[in-house]
Image (tube, rainbow, N blue to C red; front, top):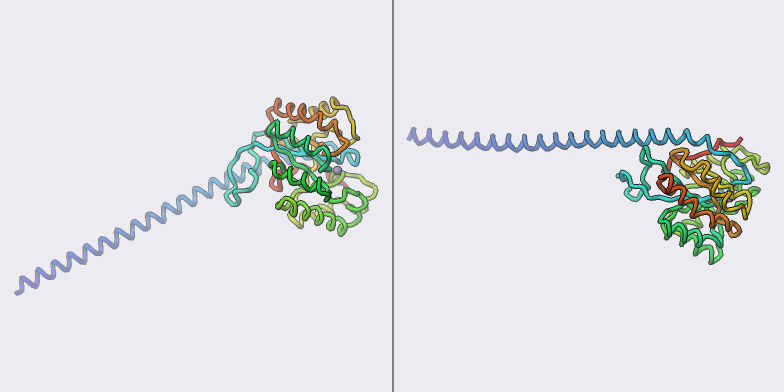
Length: 313
Ligand SMILES: [Zn+2]
């Protein structure tokens, strides 16, 4: 009887030890799993930090370029567009966001101001032929023809940015209230027509404009944009087509070539205007010059490192 009792106790003790070992085993497996998770998290954080530093370094390099932009005031306030074909690390927070610039890569942004116009389709056809994307800094035009043009630009994959609704200096720069009302008007028009809210702006005349009608410093208007998270862009490659319609094609090409690729971000100023036929005629050669220089075409978004003139008082 005593022996049987002893045997029972031994069996029970063995079972207890087995259960204990099993629990310990599960506990260690769990610990190892969470440790691996921690290691992964640390590794991811490091990768993110390195990526951020690379982007910051690129931005710092770009801001140096800002100042060398020619400041051409009213005569050359017109605009252009941009192309994009770069590939980059995707933004994990927003998979649809534009890629950030790759350090060491030279970008060109073709920009067209003042459209849409009777030349919009011709410009789109050339961009399509070269398979490059551009940025159109548009004004407000609500007739049926132009409404279709906003759509065509967006559907072709180009970026639509704002260049004020009215483009009337006296209107746009009369006060921050008038500026804001004009801004709201062009932003809601583009959103209504394309479904996408534009977040990039180019000042009529550029941020360096010395327009006599303007009483407030440009900083007042930049503050309005800042408060809404809207980025503004100037240019650093001026084709000089803003100096008037019918500038010779050769002049536009040679002016563009002067500064193309001199910095990491070439922002080319051109105009989408009905009377600017020579801009359209010069466009293929300007695109070819970018290709010959090995530049990467991209569009301007709110995430693009800024290219600014010296802000006018
Ligand atoms: Zn303009």
